[in-house]
Image 1 (cartoon, helix red, strand yellow):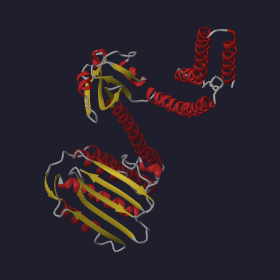
Image 2 (cartoon, rainbow, N blue to C red):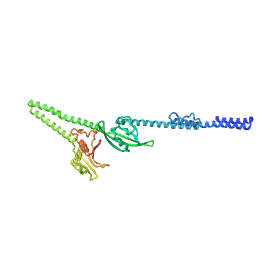
Image 3 (cartoon, rainbow, N blue to C red):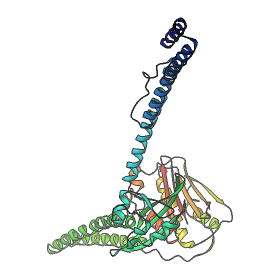
Image 4 (cartoon, rainbow, N blue to C red):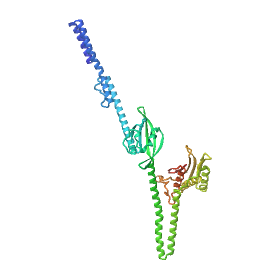
Length: 424
């Protein structure tokens, strides 16, 4: 509006000037006024655009919000308002992204697994606290800076591909290490980056072994004390009764001592059975025949227990020690039968087959009450049992038999179904 008024004034000045000046002077004056008016118009038109440009630059640096006051025209104000809304939304998204990144960085930084990220030239871009503790050093610049004790790691890391796994062995400070290495890859700014996770499995295995020995020692101490203490007490009782001439009482004490001693011998023999599983004699075995023989031995006479046997494929031939596998299967079936005592509509299922990797699977399932959750992790501990008359060696022996075959025993349990599976 001000520019329109200025234009009218310029036109009026031109008409008045015509009465006072000649045509040439009027032409010059008109040209000068046109220039002044054009500059003013350009400044006024460019003002909202300039304000927006300044606002965008400020927003890019994260220091300001859009200048809606400077964008005086209606179009400029609309653009500035829309830009403000867009920047506000982007700011919220950026804040959420930054929060996620900060949480992820904290998780990686404090993870128990040692993590390294490096490029194709061997330059280490990132390493977390666990990696620094593993190598006992601050941030390493390159893979070649890894301490000499861990030198076997370097060529593995240099050739590590996505999804690959390796086991690297070595010695540091007189202590052996076995580091499992797993790799993945990603791209940053067009450059390939490899990320490696390193876990000292030797130390983990040592910790588990120490826990196992501590558990076994507690069980052995408990069982031996249960027999040794009564034997000691009964010996004193027998001696006292003999001194008093109580021959009958002395004989009864000695007989009790004999029973407790025999029980202790059985316990020791059971321990030897678990601790000294013989080396398997491998030969071609029809597992279907073996499974059906065990079923006939233990289940054919049990009218109170229904049984179901599935062997697929049939014949199912495997290279195993038939005697050891038969013993393991007998223990699994007996374990199922014990779980089904007083169970109405009791059922035992025996399934034998091969998994996708061609490994032999023999599973025994029952529909009993299930294994309590607090006992599930201890069912393979030697001499651990939840039954008053149980020995606690059946499942432990099964696991030992599986191990000498290079396999394992898996267990899953819930009320109404427990499954124990030999994987060989």
